[in-house]
Structures are given as structure tokens and as C-alpha cells.
Length: 469
Ligand code: ATP
Ligand code: MG
Image (cartoon, rainbow, N blue to C red; front, side):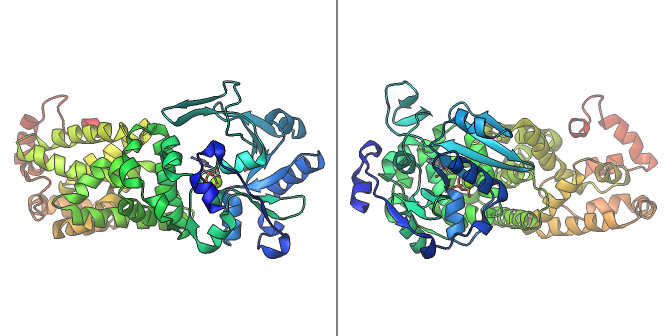
């Protein structure tokens, strides 16, 4: 079996069926969602083949709880739609049926073929599939999937598991292998390299040596992957509960540089160690939030992943004499644009991400008016959480973090009194590399002498805060 798999270009690949009967595997119907069971039974009663497939079968065999249940059938999408009132057809590249039960959506896909039948429905450019909508047999459906562990079919007719590519054994051995020749399969779809890294990290699988070997040579194919798809894959890597593991695996795979080049470079530079601590702390706390069912946002994630680059570039600009607020805004913009060429960052997240960055130097301005303005900023909480992550950068940042923790716990009137009493010293007490000029803080303190200076310094429209407020 293995020989025929690894020798074959996909078209020539032959599937060999192994049936694992119910009494020999651990999948029980009680672990399958009610919606998925209804779809499976209904298709079956209507005379169609109906299987649970993909990640759900894999996860069930590993004792996990799948987050979604995908179904494969020989019924066409139109036939599926006729069987279910609560069904809509979606997708252009692949037509799929979604059957909706309350908040559960069961995805039903018709077996997909892998040979061009001349209908013009399949397009390959430079070995890459760009459109693939040919229906096929279950064997064809199995071998066009990515990894052997993802190509198992649980039959509702006899509760057996059908294995055409040796996936059952690979799951027992906890080994990730590609179906067919890894080089061809990665060339066809480079994102499979990221999927391999992500799934192996999540499941604690070993990536088979021949599946790992092409990364070095083929990694740069990811530079041409569609940015929107890389955004989706990024969320699956880092915002699905296994962010820290995924990050470590991605870095070890050598592929980080192909997806997040600025991050990889910042990690290699001076200050890279504290940046690594920040990334790891950020991802670990994100994983905890997800485990606790708390919301997470891509904006914060991207702010974490790109901070090393933003910080280094802002420091350089400021050292060259660029006014700090302006430097932070420019650099934030620039870093976002650079990264978005590779991984799309939807605008609504990009804006928040930049705010998190540009608010960082403002934590250093601990004078009354600015303190209250920052506390009331809609992005204060995210920016403060981010500041706390930066603890490894320097003792000054730790001190700053404690100050703001304290400030939030202090009643407003008390805080106002404290700040009125020691406006100047409070700011000067924490000199910090990010913004050497403490003069700006003093300028806006609400003491008569400084008020005069402030008016002189802030030209209309050039106020440092206007852009982020
Ligand atoms: P997850 O736990 O992240 O959902 P998954 O394996 O279910 O993992 P999905 O993206 O939900 O991943 O894909 C469902 C199934 O579709 C996979 O198990 C696999 O069989 C197939 N598949 C997904 N992406 C590809 C791809 N790029 N190439 C070939 N087959 C794929
Ligand atoms: Mg899935």
C-alpha cells in the first residue's frame, strides 16, 4: 500500500480498502452530534452513501471532541437540498450543502473526483489546483484529501470505518503522512505545509520525515498563497486553542519566515529574546482564554506577532529625530502594509491593532489629563493587556504596568488628587527607551506654567492624540 501511495502522482494512485468493523474501533454514535446523525440517517434512508469524514473521524478515533462534523455522500448538492428543508448550497469553487440545526451547521460534500473529465470544471495552473468541482467515487474522494489521517470514512450503514490510504494505522502510530507524493501535493497546494505543522502540533503527531523534508525547498511557495487563505489558516493556527504549540512548531519547521517574515526577522535580531517571551506569553494567555470560552480577537494576535518589528522600527525613527507620535503612527502603518502583502489583515482588525501599538508610548505619560484620557480610550483595555505582556522588555515596563494596574484600581478623585500633587516627578520617574522625551508630558500637565507651554507646542491639527482618538 505504502509503495503505491508514495510512487504515484495522484491520478495514478490506487486506493486499497481496509474496513475496520465497529467492534474494532472506538467511534460511538453518542459522540456524534445530533445534527450530523440526522443527516447521515436521512441520506442513508434515501438510498445514498453517507459517511462522516475528515477531521471528525480522526478526532473521534483519538478520543477528542470534534468541533464540527463533515459528511461525504454520493448525492449531488441538489439532491441533498431536496432532502432537507433547512439546507442551503454554498461555495463557488466547491459546491457544498449546509444543513442547519439551530446553531449547528452540518457540511455535506459530494464525493469529489481527481481526474479531469474534460468538463472544464478542473483547472490546474503550474501544478496548482485553482478550481476543482468534478464529482467522483469515494476512492477518488479519499485520495484527493491531504493527509492519510484525514481520509477515513465512518459509515452510518454498518458503523465501520473505511480506510483507503492507510490512515487508520497512521493514527495509531500518531504519524502525519501525505497521500501521494509530498512534493507534488505541496506544489498543488502549499497551504498543506501549514496544515501539516498545525495539525501535528495540535494532535501531538510526528510529521513523517518525507512529509517534512520538502519544507525547506518548497516553503517559499507560501509567498504566493492567497493572503485571505493565509489569514484563515493563521486564525486556525493561533486562535483555536493551540496557539503556543502551533507557534513553536511553525518556527521549528522553518516556515515562519514564509508567512510572517517580519516576525522571523525581529526574533533573530537584538531584543529578539524579549520579543519571543512576549509572543509566547500572548499565545499562552490566548489559549487560556479560549479554554475558558472568552472572546479573542485577531487584532490582538497580530499586534503580538508584529510587535518586534514595530518596536524596532519606531526606535530607529525616533533615534533619527522623528517626532515620537508621528514615528509610531508611520511605522504602525508601514508594518501592517508589509505584513498584509503576505497574510491579509481585514481592515477592522488592522485599525485596532495599530491603536494597540500607538497607545503604548502613551502609557509613559503619567500626567493627570493624559492619564484620564487614556483610561477612557475605547482601546485602553487591549492596550493595557498588551503593556502587561511587554514585561520582559525592561524593569521600567514592569513598573509602568504596575502603575497602570494601580491607577485602574484607584477611585478617580483619589487618582486625580495624586496626579495633581506630583505631576512632574511621576512622569520623570520611569525613563524609558521608547520615548526619551519626557518634556511632552510635562507640557500638558495642568499646572499654570506648563499650560502656557502646551498651547505653544500643540499646533491645530497636529495634536499627537488626534489620530487615535
Ligand atoms: P480541523 O480540526 O482544523 O477542523 P480538519 O482536518 O477537519 O481539521 P478542515 O479544514 O476542516 O480540517 O478540512 C476538512 C477535511 O477536508 C480534512 O480533514 C481533509 O480531509 C480535507 N482537506 C482540507 N483541506 C485540504 C487541502 N488543502 N487539501 C486536501 N484536502 C483537504
Ligand atoms: Mg474540520
